[in-house]
Length: 102
Image (cartoon, rainbow, N blue to C red; front, side, top):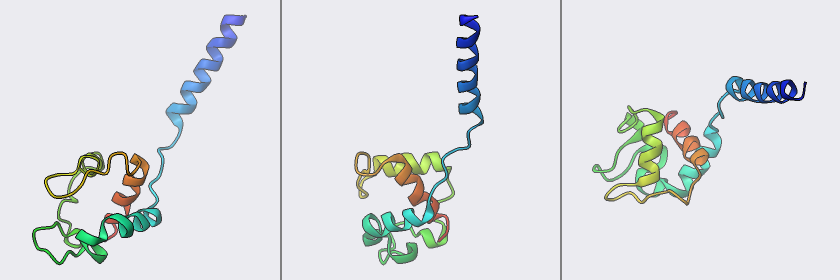
């Protein structure tokens, strides 16, 4: 009987995790984060003054999967700083959600 109870508790936990919806991104929080960390280079509404910087207003760089964008923002590149350790993955997802509205 004890083993059956343990099995049922474990099974219930697995089913709860498996059926739980993903964490939704908060585009309003993403906008606040964008305005704090990104607007200086990428410009208001995703329109940078420097043509060498991706314009999110016309979709530059946004035709990628969220997971790929998340890793790019975490790691940075030659010019853009890495945000790993500064922003959580959820905050980066929020920014990506905001970028997709531009």
